[in-house]
Length: 620
Image (cartoon, rainbow, N blue to C red; front, side, top):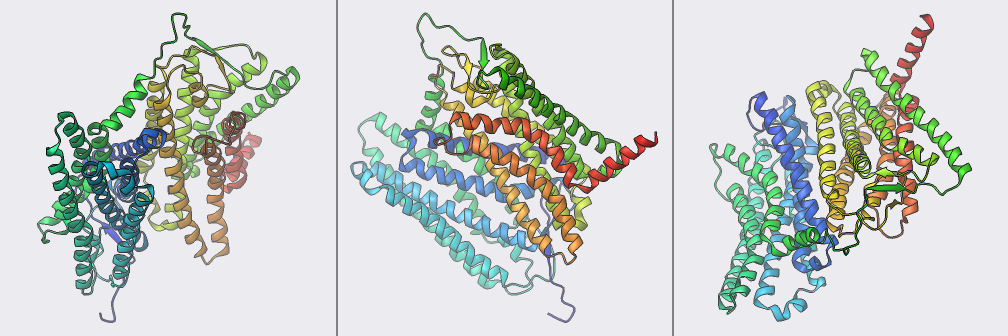
């Protein structure tokens, strides 16, 4: 390659060539579609998990399809969104190869899962009497495991062949993400082996499964047409039509991208097709299964129809609640009132000091402290939503809270909790960019990007809380008015409803997965990259400073996510309500108080600013 050969360490994702205004517009559109994909697939997963009537092979495979859709979208879309709002569209070599590997693994696995689903439909319709024997749980698990294994093995083969190639020329990947064909065009070596392996893999995971599905559906169609009952034919067509729509969308686009001969004119078309494949398909799949699948619709309908139950002519609707809180012990309650009042005062003072310092000192007007100011505001609002009512109950445990006041408290508590979850994710991304890409930090974390991230966190928190509130308000409360909690917490309120709360619990679980498990996983990945980057720093002082800027955030993340995941995602059994009450007490009282302490005691910039302000006050 010559003595002046330069090896490429990162790539530039060209993406869509749009104006700044159009990029901002598409950022919001794609963000909403991505959030809808996560929420819709999360609801499908929760419905299948919570509804025993959906614990069948068909819905077992559907859960795997939903997981793949979430993984598929999460692998491609976040980087795509970042590129839409930043001028710097670089992606380093390792993340690019990782994205390529995961994209191929999830795509190949989804092809094979769809083939397994068609086989399930074939057995159900063509051999109904032997269905339970043929499609045993052992067979279903084996089919699913084989699909995932083959997807990852094929992806490993492609990745190994890709890693052997030298990249020493152009850096511009003419795509929205690191897609294997687009990356191969940048290699300064012969890629014929890679092309042959890709073609062979396409035959294996596209042409082969598609042919088997065509054979399966040919037999299915013949069997359906032989049915005497019109209702039987309608039901059989209904169970297959959803799967056929998904297969048509997925395989049609995949074959256009990978099986049609390439040309320069098709590059832009392939980008749009891949955008549809990675953004719209994961969003449309749960819609297709919910709108065209009778059993999924019936699961929703049952949840809605059972909301209002006939409690007889003597039913009395509750218009206020009594918060049980702590055991009735006057001395203990007075002590706790004094203690919690001090904690509450310190929370307001500590977080108010953080906000004031960031506002007064221009040296703290950086992205890191911009997000910290939002976190402090959320902590103040979080504490103000729950603690005052808790203090009132300690003075007068029999004093009720009105229905409207209780619903408002529930809504605000959820809003601030969800917003804080997302802000902590944004802060981890900020630390990742600062440590792993320090030279491009100011370009990536521009004020436009920071404002967009903060605003998105608040909007998503409000919207998800509105969904929970809309589902909570129609429920009748007519049995007990005693809430076994310190404040109006949604799971404690749901226990008092004299109607079926299945849909509410589904949404709580889906919401918890989308704002706790997903964000927490992204934080773990960010800090894995951060630790790897810190360990490569030669200077001991540099390592100490890098760990110092991250340790505060890690402490806050550990406290917040630890209690929240145990509360809302942990196993339902083995966690009595009393334990969860006190966990949430820590979550809503101690976390907002500890956050400013952690950031002030472990952050040198905040401590130095506080010292300067105090010295100025003494001079004055």
